[in-house]
Image (cartoon, rainbow, N blue to C red; front, side):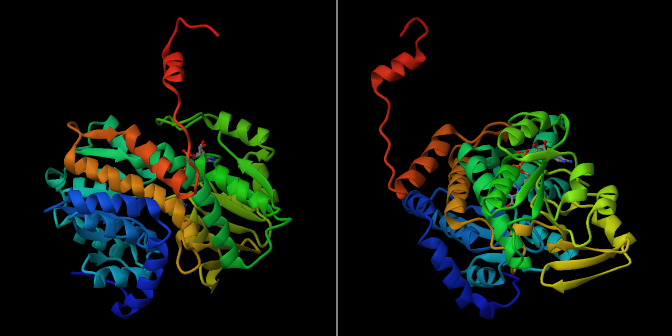
Length: 426
Ligand SMILES: NC(=O)c1ccc[n+]([C@@H]2O[C@H](COP(=O)([O-])OP(=O)(O)OC[C@H]3O[C@@H](n4cnc5c(N)ncnc54)[C@H](O)[C@@H]3O)[C@@H](O)[C@H]2O)c1
């Protein structure tokens, strides 16, 4: 059972899947193991991920492990309709198309959760939250969460004792946040903004809000293209569990990395292009729109579209219209402001955003697949947020290295003994 935009797009989707499949050695390796072991035999896996070619290969891998797949998207704009059609043709149950309304988006998630899946694979926590709201948690053995915002929400639920099943924080694995959030978001955000605008990056002032894993990657890629990058951070932190450092540390890191660091009041006056990647809300709001230059381009690479206060802009702008795909022109206070991809994840908005490079998603989805196996065969005993087992994190990095022709030597027994001793000198 599926609902996709156009089943006739399946052949085009297969071409996309082919390209991803031949460039995802980690999932190929995982799939071989799954075909023998069938860890998901007799189970349903419910998925809410950006439904595009790399996700397609993850779903094929899970199915090769015996799972029945029920999948929707985790964002109303990010589905590749060709790939969705191809996966539906392969016999998976797919509920996704690009350009959904909010109601359609939630309807699709509901189709997935209504199947009572034993395992959830989520990106942003919407599916997990729906399982809780609709009282389906008793069917769920466990889940895996892909992104920072999702893990932050899960930790908040966990702190209040509201999380009813175990969830692996896939986002927090080294092999995930170091590479996916940094290099993946960096390259794909730059790609998407270039595709949408076709404007020169060199010489422009690009304001990056948030110097976390994503922000670091975005800042570095834009600087590499010749932009003058300004980083904006917050004084302190937001009181949630942080993997590393407060806004003070991130701002200092950006300063040492050679970027200009400002607050948004200062940065909003000088930016030509704005990119938010904070996981926070109203990072760009009225005072910033008021100070922006005529022609400023505004975009978001954080999980939700509330990083830019579009409610305000939509209500106060004299008019706004889409002047080209994913580029909206706002007539605000006598100047033009351009908002990309309706404020949603700029790097994943179809047709201009293709998402992360294939090899990057191979790593992230390698962890997803192995954590889903862990839920099936080695279910954590207690509800709550679990860290990704070290063996899985190391294994994924090892396969990625070996696929790149890099073969490391293990430390000697003497070196291991030395590293663990406290009574040996030099
Ligand atoms: N676009 C993508 O493909 C993609 C990929 C991975 C993660 N994400 C999303 O991107 C967002 C950031 O993820 P991350 O891993 O970089 O998180 P992170 O926690 O490492 O970094 C976020 C940073 O934003 C800063 N920040 C918070 N509020 C701010 C504000 N008002 N102004 C300026 N800075 C502020 C924080 O101090 C922190 O340093 C999350 O929503 C995450 O889910 C997107």
